Structure formats: C-alpha cells, structure tokens
Length: 417
Length: 166
Ligand code: SF4
Image (cartoon, rainbow over all chains, first blue to last red; front, side):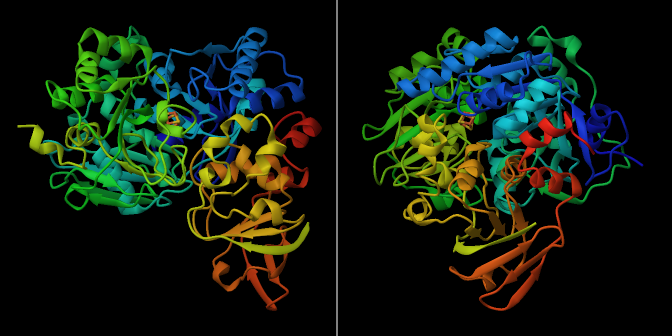
C-alpha cells in the first residue's frame, strides 16, 4: 500500500512498515530543547542517570529570553550551559537566534526525525523531515535513549492550486487554511502540502507554512522536497544532505483539501485565537500601538526584505513602536550587509538581538493594558505577549510594514505598486 | 483505576498561556510556585480553591499552544486527578500521559455542570455522573498509554522496564 510522507519517514525510523494509529518507538536523529523547556529536561535526564546524549545532533537553545532579563532565567541558562559541558549536547547561546530557524539553516535534512521540546519544531517539515514538538520529559528520553514513542498520524493533504496574487504570501495561505479548518482542524494529524503553488514559494516561504501546522493542531506539516530544497541546502554548503522525499502516488489520505490561492487576499488573525481570521478589508483601520516583525514564523531574510522594501525612505507612525527581531545570526548579518537594518532604524524602528523577541512575552516589547499589536508571529492567545489585557493581531511581514507606516492595520498592496 | 472528584468547568480553547502564562516564565524552574498561578488567565480563583481529586471538564481543544510540560504538571500538582474535554491539543495530551495525568474525551461535556461529582473508570471507558445519575462512554486509551498512566508516568515506567515496552 502507498505511503504518505509521514508514514514513509516513520517506517524507516521504526525499522518496520507502520500504519496510521499504531504506537511505535522511533529512532531520533535530531533533538532540541529551549531555555523554557530545557531545565526540566535536564532534571528528568539526571533522574534517569543518563550520562551522554545519544542523537548525533542534540542542541540546547537559549532563545526565548536571550539575553536574560532576570536572575532566575540567567540561572536557567546556566543549567543548560553546564549540561552541555557534561553530556556533549551543543549549546546555541545568546546572539545565535531561534531554534527552528537555526535547525533549518544548519542541521535538518530531508528524511530526518527531529523532536523538540518546543511546539514549533514542526517548522522542519518544510525540509521533508518528520519534525514535531513534544514535552520536556520526552526530550530527556530522546536525549538519553535516542528514541521516542509516537503514534503514527493519519494525514490530511492540502492541494495548493492557482497563482499567488501580489501582496499575498505564504503566511496568508497558512492563516487562511487555519481559519478554514479551525485551530483544532488537524489535531493529532499530519498535514502534507502539495500542488503547483509550491513552485511559487521559496524554501523560506515554505518554512512559514510548516511552522504554523501546530496552530491547526497538527503533529507535523510536511512538504515534499525538490530543487528549491536542494538549492537552499546547497547555499549553506549542505547539498549532500539533500534527498528526495515525497508521498507515493497511491498514498492514503484521511482527507484532501483543495485550496485555490488565486483569489486570496492578505489575511489577519484577530484576538485571541489563530483561527479567528478575516480578510484585510475587515481589519483595515484598526489602530495599533506596536508592530513586531520577527519570530520563527516570519523573521527570515526574505521577510525582512519584503518589509524593508515597503519601509524604505519612510517613517513609521509616531504613535506606534516598531520592533524588528531577525530570527538568527545569519539573518541578522545578511540584513546588515544589505542595508535592511539601516532602513528599519531610519524608519524609527528598533532592532533587537536574534531570538524569540516579544513573541512569548518574557521580555522585550511587553504590551501595556488595552494595547494592540500587529505581529508576524504565529500565535495570538490571551496573555501571549506578556499581558492578558493586550490584544494580538497576526499578519504577514508586508502587512506589518504597511501598518507600521500608517499606525492602523493597512492593506500592503497599496505600497507594492 | 477508578477516579472520583468534583467538577470545575472551563470553555473552548484553554491554551497553555491560560494555564502557565509566559509572564511567569521565570518560575518554570520552581513548579510549586508556578502552580500557584495555574489557569490564572482562565479563572483567577482556581489555584486557591481547587482541591485534591477535583476534575477539570472543558470543551474543545484543551491545552492548545506551546509544548510546555509545565502546564499539565502544575495542573496535576494542584491536585487535579483527571481532565475531561471534547478534545485535547496533541502535545498537551502527550505530556499529560507522560506525567501520569489521565485525559478523557467525551461528547457530553455540556451535560456536566460545575460541582457535579464524577467517577471515571479508565480501563472500561466510563464516566459516571453521580450528581445527575448519568453515564458517558469513551474509548479507553491504548494499552501503552494506560500502562504509563498506571505507573504514574513515563519516569516510573522507564525506571521499571528500562525501555519502552510495546
Ligand atoms: S519565536 Fe515565538 S513561537 Fe517561535 S520559538 Fe520563539 S517563542 Fe516560540
């Protein structure tokens, strides 16, 4: 019987033919924790008496509160640094950036099983890896035993058809899909994407789609690999990591969704759930106090380029703060070379260290009572950005840039000529 | 295993940010302190009033959001014996199994009111509402998960067997 991408990868990692619904034990290639989830992993790892980490790439990311805003978190960071020294796990410290971006740039390869104690670990699915988020205890076992238990998911196929209009991006596609199927529309399932639209999306744009699979409840968001994937790896000196991953033609899907992108407009998620989506027309004119451009969803070089092309030579609205956080050091350096950071600062924005930035409400850019923010991140839950009395709207980097200029949510197409 | 407790009701989409808000990120290495804020953004008085054995009953997609295992851990630490909902977010579900907190999916959550007393039979898939004299059925968890919960979580399970036993 034909297999979906998820079934194919998990069959290899379990060492047998697997079926959806089955519980399996699978070998882990890459494992990650971050500064919020990692200290608990360390505690459990030590309780088991494990000594060294088993997966060839085991990485501890200090990204959620980097640099640390308070002593408790500085101590948590030191737990990870100390763990790295004694177990051979790598540490990715302050200044390096968000785990999911760095994993994509440096480590993930098609066919891998990547598990991470962070829900957006699903980002790696865009490189054809079975890449999924789980808990701290799971990661202690993944580090110590080199394997995890998994329930093999059924797969939903999303067939992306048509031609992506100007001013509409992969962020709008995935927000649209989540709005359509709901925040629990794909719970426990694998999402797999296919169709002609993939050819119109760069590897970076694809990462945004897989990143948000968890916002529909999914376990993974898988995209078949192709020349675009090869090119992305090659640019990073990793061409040998490339392999072709795709579903069998006779694979069995639990559901198939046809999504025509040709008539899509920019999408905005309203507070306080990601599936509370509207078109830009229904959002235009809402006054915001802050714009955040960054996160593992949309803090890549391409995102910064799009925003900079809109902001170039312009000023942000005086009543709003504009915060830019490159997702990684690589993105930061590239943006520096291309003069993008200068454009942002000239426009009145502030550029912060690579990392999660304001996304999770631990430091930087916490909202005041009654304030609204337009953010390029992936989540807008109540309290997410540090204040349950704030409101979060989600949109693409282009919408964020246009909004920063006008001070109210703005259709980016008017700035795209 | 039969669990018995009094009901606390919650609505749809209770996220990990409601359960363990990001502004208490610095308390993640201090679970008893963090537990004092459990579910604070959904119901301010929950942490101070919840009693040992109580059962949470919610609607759709309980636990959506981040992978923070601290969320089910502090719910368990606060004394909750089980959570019943229409559905759960996947990582929350997995974390709860790993730490030995039973989760049950039933359709009839709207029949249950705050303060009702429930008895849950995990192996046979039955929730008895002794206040209303009703019974709701659910599909019991797969054997592996029941075994893990039976041991009180995957930590004890692995200590006992040394590996995953499927
Ligand atoms: S950027 Fe936001 S969503 Fe991404 S890993 Fe950091 S906190 Fe999580």
